[in-house]
Image 1 (cartoon, rainbow, N blue to C red):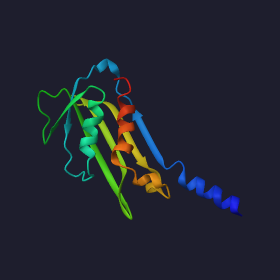
Image 2: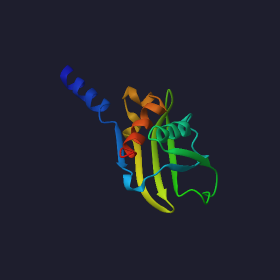
Image 3: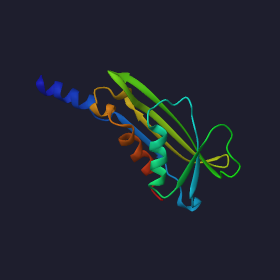
Image 4: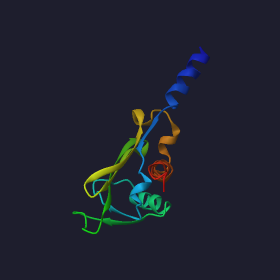
Length: 140
């Protein structure tokens, strides 16, 4: 009986995170990305983590509100959702990278079942999102 309970606990805790990435191809030779600020995202430090992630791959960023500036050949849109379990935590995020109006890369972070019993669901935004951005920009 103890073995069955232990097995169930392991199943519940594992496989709670899903990451889907369509990497950015190096042939785009991106040096600068404009990030469209999403005022609906209220996840603390989220935008800063995105900017840091791109800068770690030698890609400069600027944030804009509203219409994409004409000098921005590449732009990033994002969304993020929080869930509640004792405290707020990041449970879902998506990134879409465009060249003009054509999507050229995509990444998604998702906690299956809102994280269930996994203790890492309360991990920092940086520890969740930085690896996703790193995978998105692997070729840079």
